[in-house]
Length: 98
Image (tube, rainbow, N blue to C red):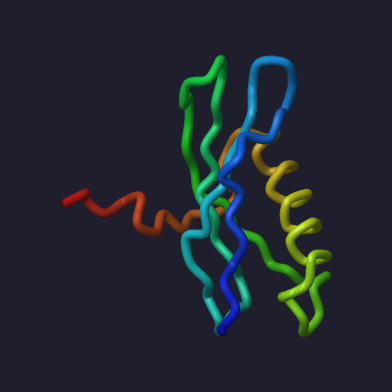
């Protein structure tokens, strides 16, 4: 079985009203950048969505262990708390839905 980037489908609290979820968007193997779509929720409703870029320099060569997912979750949490994208990459979000 091959490696699959972790998903974060369960709402993670930012504060008493807001939370976030994140879905893997893509991986740029040449630059080792990982892209996720963060969705912000408030009061149980989606209030925003944006792509973030993560360069997992801290991960070393083994991305399959629980440490990778835990650190990735921490990085995504910080980006979700900032509430905005950190990249000009728009990925599939800029493509029309079929």
